[in-house]
Length: 475
Image (tube, rainbow, N blue to C red; front, side, top):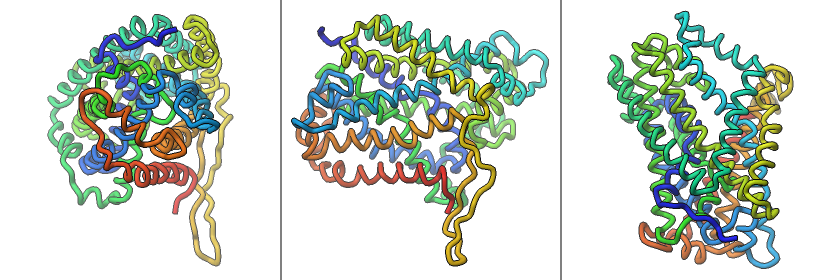
């Protein structure tokens, strides 16, 4: 069966960017930027996107476009005879399933809050007790099951229409609405009373403030965020490379995807920081920012119900675009590897995700005692000197699943894709370079071979080690 292609270049860019654009951009990015002092973090974030994110993104796209297949068969088509690179393709599929086991739940939270704002169940009876609203949602397994199930069923319904008439068509509309919404929300925030101070904190680098946090910590945080924002390492991008035309270079397309992803992340900051400074809220408050802090701000804002509705509609679009993109990968992988029809692959995968997502949303109520929990930190002392401290752990089911995907599968997977493309025992740098530079647009220079082979892998290993160590150990 002939492989389907995107109907338009815009469709490819919007769908690929939609995969990258998600909760990490509009939830994690602002609070990480706030935690690490604003402008200097943003500066380093942009630098690492250029020197790490874009190069690694081209490796996934290159494997996809050169093979015209999903990850497992893509590796098989390009790998040297008798080599085993394709084994990583199966880990990519596992990674996508694991990602959807918890990402669909969080996407369901966004949809749930959108409905709460539209119906007025949050805004009726001010002032809002945001903590109570959030805890009531988490403690209700039926509510979580309904909204998680809606996200899953709607996602596979979109994918059942195929690439052009399903994923591309719907994602185009959704992404264009998302971009309009984010601009409207950002303009509203910039018009608030404390906007000037918030924008200055966010976009003007202040190295004195960065020194208080620790320049090393700021750089490490920026490197991590820049790496994870593009959803690399589990072939979520590779699959869209397999549908691409040969008309444009992959570096140019990777730059466009990254620019769109970055635009959304930066605009999310312009929504959140002016609002935080206007209402005297700490901008680095962490994951609670979206579901506790912002609803509190909306409750004091003129037309708060409207802005809350628009914000969570935007968040729903951002997360749902990632959901449909990863679902498309799972459907295509099953069709490629098992010869299933699109209809069968869609149905089977829908049932799998519906079942596999249950532990996550039940992890906040019925299964709340399941996880890894340690109450106290433990110091490791040798010869009277403290070497390090074992951190106390509070890892529920969602946190464990996220740790496996974000801290292990994404960096390890990105490293494998990179080494496959640049090493002599893999596909090889010359073949990779030829594929990347096919078509019109920005060309990748062959002089970067040393950087790709020896420096970029080290940067990824640093991220991998750092992510593991910071979770369990404090020096």
